[in-house]
Image (cartoon, rainbow, N blue to C red; front, side, top):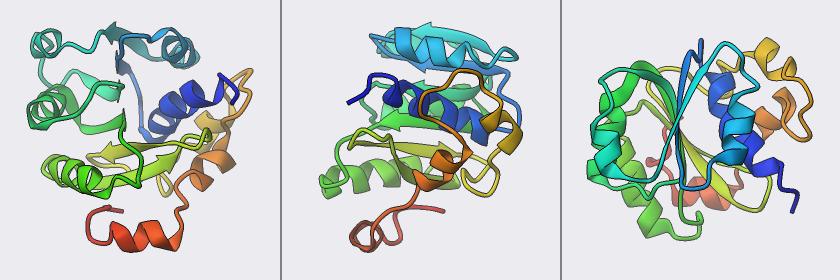
Length: 181
């Protein structure tokens, strides 16, 4: 699979859902590709930390518009994400396959304590991520101008953005009442 698809989708989906993404936090132990994509948004300040809860605990309240995470999510971690994310922020995270329904239902219920919208989206590489938003809907509130004005992308565009949220009926039925859209 093409190496550029995953970082483009992990970064540009939440950033182009945000009204204004002035501050982006990347939580990853191998963040170089994610950093490169985030840097395409010149108006944004990007901070990168490793997958370490102690480091997350030191961050200021209400300080990030977007958090992109490759760290395993649990209740303690999600409460810290909520604390450091602004009131209209987006959180994009990797997770187990949607086939692992029990794990994902638990994760989505935990996310539901903090976010109005929780939707899986296709990363284009046979995996999905979860986009959780406190305010903006990823298909209704996409910033089309921002999505189509990013230079030199190989995969992501506004059509891919919207299409990435399409899920088959078996997923819809399995996660009925859990996915919030």
